[in-house]
Amino acid sequence: MSYPLFLITWEFKSLSCHKHKEIAYKNKLRLKLSQFIFSCMLRKNDESAVNEESLMSKEIVIVGAGFAGMWTALSAARLAKLKKADDISVVVIAPVAELRVRPRFYESKVQTLVSPLMPVFEAMGVKFITGNVTHIESEKQLVVYVDENQNLVTKHYDRLVLAAGSNLRRDMVKGIAEHAFDLDQIDTAAVLEQHLNGLASKPSSQARNTVVVCGGGFTGIEIATELPARLKALLGESEPVRVIIIERNGQIGTNYSQELQDVIKQATDDLEIEWILNAQIEEITAHGLRLCSGEEIQSDTVIWTAGVKANDLTNVFAKQQGPQGRLHVESSLKVVDQSNIFATGDVAYAATDDKGNHALMSCQHAILMGKFAGHNVAASLLDCDYLPYKQENYVTCLDLGSWGAVFTEGWDQKVKSVKEDAKKIKIAITNELIYPPKAELDLIMEQADPLAPWV
Image 1 (cartoon, rainbow, N blue to C red):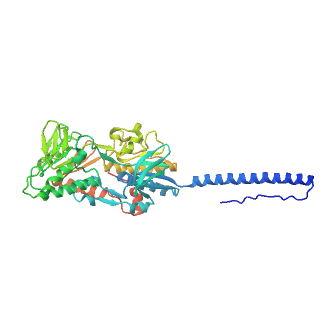
Image 2: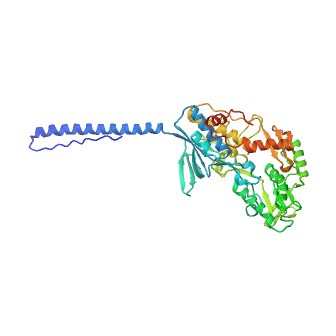
């Protein structure tokens, strides 16, 4: 709003000295009055600017659109809607507006394992920015990202939620980056699938027919048990295929319950998968790999699955980093000693209960952590109480290829189902349960509730 300024000029002609002084005095008074009015106008404008700023939208910026990021956005928007807080906006920054279903990247047709996010975001009024966040300036409450035109952009936030996920470590053994395949991201998983599909065009040889999986964790086991049937389908039933798992520990599934170990061993034995235990890899080469023992394995296909770390953005908060670079958080999922920043999913080292268990880098934990993080980050702007994150129930559902699957309950991993029965559970989880909800407001409001039933 603009205000007119009145500048009063006086013209003097044939005036007496007394009259001149009187008019000059009145002019001086008028000038002071004009200056006073002008200063009041400026002060009013300043106050209006402050009031307008205080009424401006408060922005929650979420970095990442994986399981944790998606549910953080939906849950934050949910609480804002419940409180009729139209002044709070929720913004997600990620390279692409789709959920990439990472737990299924060992399957074929990996490029189809995505789900669009704009329908659910639009239903909840969540904004999306295409970009890759490269830096966080926490003192200034800014994130820096590269947009789709490769421009460097700076964005302010009132609250930040770091949900940037995790990445495979490629610095553990010489030759990983140059010669190994992996399932870490959809693009690298697609490269592996293309390579496998191309093996049939190569002459039959021991190296062509041998796949080496480095790492005997869940990812390594799921891709290894998937491969025998897939390789037979690609190369022919009569071709002798060989799948080997290299494990540095002295037994299969060292960190798993004895029950679960026994099932994994039975499945891999039945599928004729070999284990090489107590093995350290010295180097991965263009022709296979060499163990520290000196043994060399000829293979055209070496898959690296060992070693995962939180996204490099966590390095900004070095004092708060814990195991695997994950950030120590309070029960609200607010980063320790950071008043405006929350962390969730793979980047958060969060206690799930009072028994010493912590959330794993898994979609099972990322989904519920996202719901709590979203609720609590919105609550921090709405002066509402936090909901402390808890996830006492824990299940394991491990795909074991054509053998079936295994389903366990509890942190002690008691086996509840195996083979085809467990496979049905696995398919229900990975093909339905973990996908985004339908883009229906009432359904999203219900499912984004952190206290709604979950695994």
